[in-house]
Length: 428
Image (tube, rainbow, N blue to C red; front, side, top):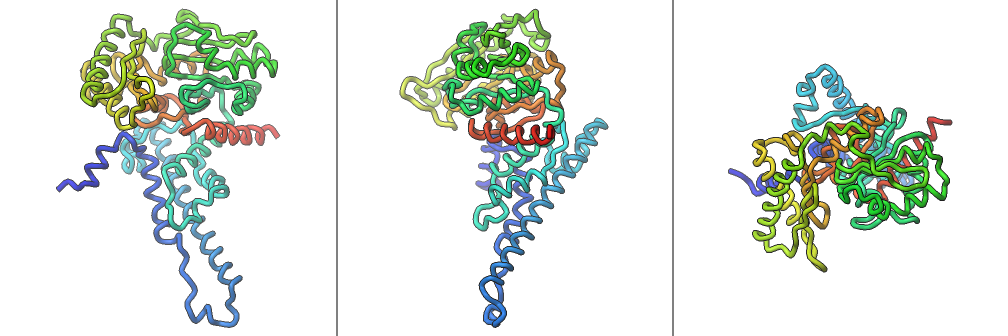
């Protein structure tokens, strides 16, 4: 018999990350069995030599022991990942213990010092001291982020960022007072290339991208970055379709396809329009089926569903639109069980937070274009974004590079501060 829990699990599969769920499950043992230390017996408490300070000392020892249990679990998972990487190098990654425990596990491009990252996060957030709230999805996500930053820092050559909800609020612009400005400038001064890979598609219209990033470009000018430094800043719009590079005047220049390796985008315009026709029909059907107060917008290489003025769509409605479009396009291309990046014309159908878009191409292609241009390998490239669930548009980058999963610009700032500390420590 199928339980209600099992039904809900399958319905929510698109909202889960299997590795994080696996780690959460492993951390339940110390939480359930050891998070609340055994109290002293009544006779011990009544004994003259036992007093409040001794009881506190006992509790502190028990808490330290539990912290060690958490750390050992992360050390064991670290070992599983290292073994998986060895199997990957031999071309038999599917035979690792981790692959058997988490069948959908992907590729790890670096070692992950999880135990060290856990201790750093636990020192700040005291995860192991909690008695009533077990380690959460967000706790594990942040630990993975810190571990990835620690691992990639020595070889870092390229950092790519999503735009909305990563560098600035959804639908807003990069303002001049944005605290991320000096952190991005610090990367450029270290000769680390920085690129914004965004779904925003304005064609070759550089001024529209400059408007969205006006605060950052003004920050470059105020800090008087050299031509070499600003020449390491790129913007890739429409997921992977429109490339721009910053010039010495702190403006964006459109880079023609003929000026860089763009063979990863091998589709023709008739093919693109045919695919967008299918996506547009599917989104229109979603509007009809769910009686959505939304309209369809068509662009040269994208089609989207956006709410009407003063209206807001729920996450579930947007997920339905994204998954419906994804299935329709996979079916149209004859591969209903494939992934959006593994079909003749790769695409990205994603929940944008308050809208839903289908873009031709994806950020996997975008990141690879930049890697080919700049000579950066997967182990020296880091992508930072907020959309790593199956209905998001950052998840495809996991095939091309290391990633950090954040949920807002404040977390991006925290992550970059950690990176700054690691890079500075290596320079001392």
